[in-house]
Length: 206
Image (cartoon, rainbow, N blue to C red; front, side):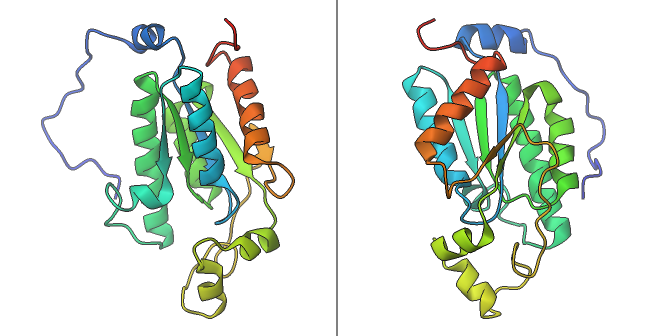
């Protein structure tokens, strides 16, 4: 599925590089990759962080799993192969956003380690931050914001992550957040601090 089929193509370099775009935006491109079970708080934190960063004057954008499947990845299902292609495409889109100097936030279950490792390699370690929303399954299931766990338990959904399909937790994420004990606002403060320390955004007041 990832084999290049196009022929007679050549990569063209433009006259503006990433550093020039970052200077214009007064920030450095970064991809914050939120991963975790359905209901673990990925999207909530991503959108809270996006709002906070915009309030601080930074350009950022959320690539949300469900939203992406309405458009770019609407032809993909939830088999292991299609999940891998879903994440591969987002890794490539994220790479472009980072090159544009944008702070990009992705909220995908992305249950398989190898797919997330491949996304990191695509973007580059300097610009990739894996954030594991390590919220307990029972908490996620009690929240069940989309009613998916109930359907999975009833056998109406097959291959649902955390029920009858595995979730492979990250080994060394840049940050671990348990939303059963940390609010989205608290997580946002911690994430902004992470970006500041990484030199992606300046500290407040500078």
